[in-house]
Image (tube, rainbow over all chains, first blue to last red):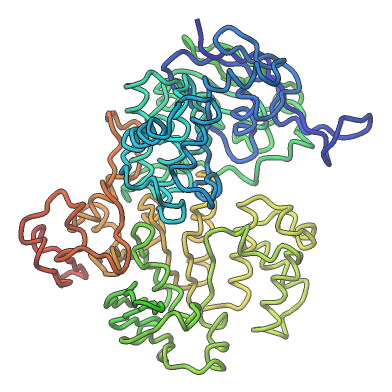
Length: 320
Length: 318
């Protein structure tokens, strides 16, 4: 059985906040997204800023309320859950946030930050037990037990991210949403954190939804990759299949933008003109057509649906 | 004569109880029209070096016990405030890492660019010049963008607006401090491409500061690699990237994630960049170096000229 099954997920926001009123504009941040995550698997979710990937990550663990659709966690639909029922389930899934500088409370020591998770779920019964558990968690993320009494500002970005991971691990979750966990770090440090996440997965069988925009990092850690654009999945498949032979023109452009050290590499960057359009005014037909290098007439009027073009590899493009 | 000539720069931060050295004897030249990439991890001293070019760090706590920074022949470190205001914008302009926090959130983009024009080229402080600059940096529909506030623009657009502001004063040297780090890879590619175009169109010199060696190949003519306040390697870009001589440069190159690399673990540099005031003895990189020898712990190597415009601070990997 899949650990996580997302079916026709929609997350819409009313422009200007508040409730949907007739006449108010809807921001379709996530529009009809379906995917699954198996136990111990990593699914990479990529796309540019504004494509809805962070919203998907937050919605599947109910940090944001879905507008429609269902999210099945270990066979149970968590969308209608509230209060105690939801709280007890929260031990099973956690999140690691993007910004290591704002995701840790600056007025709490590391001991208090990680201990808080243990306290909320009543996972230890004596102060000694608690402090031993915090030490063990710090060591499992490559930090020193002595760091427990320090404050976040005394650590580097990479170290803070490790603290965030230790905090997520404290409750022994089966699933962690990693929302751009390395984007704010130097490349040399990114590798350390990605390797740590991978080792923890092997050791503890944790599944990840790894949200990011750098395909080289995502390819390395993911078993499967989903590419999002303007609230929808435009391509999905096994990691190597998506990065090795991408079908959707947007995926091809994303791949060509990955920085390459070799100055002699004959890589020609596909430069997409302009920005991702506003989700308030999505283009007609295929939402990618205004920026697409191979758009045809059909693309302006008809929205392509996801279809399987290779085993387990889906793409939403008329020209695939 | 080089446009920028940093000679044996030492930068200290004086705190109440102690003094730490953030930049320890850095020398660097940039010729007119040349692009130099200053690379290294966060905490290496590259930003402090770059900000010192226009003396942008408040003093105290910063102090310059030794060295000179000659910009267009004049020593910035000896200038009066009046003279400094003349060179800022006119000779050197900056583009910073996070455009969202560098742009003034309560002023429209058009008026921020005009402010720069009013300071340095008052006769050109017109809407049409603002439009020309917005077009130069590739902002579409500039007539509408002139009235936009920074928060109404995406990260990529904000960065283009920052570049327009920096170019408004027609500087001879553009210092770009991690200009693409906060942006998506596709937008990074756009901004690098823009800098490339501007370079050839305007004949401007650029000091590009970054920790990511994946973005310097297209843009930089020469590379200067910094670690713990010192330069550890220099040379023509292609040569340094294809035949790096210092273990730190090699490690930085290897840690850029590559597509299709079939490795179990991404290559990282173990450990952390040491903080100023807590530098290791001997070679500052030795605790993290794969090629370290016993002598590296005790002998602090000096930067050696290797000919062909190359230099390196490592006796082991000569």
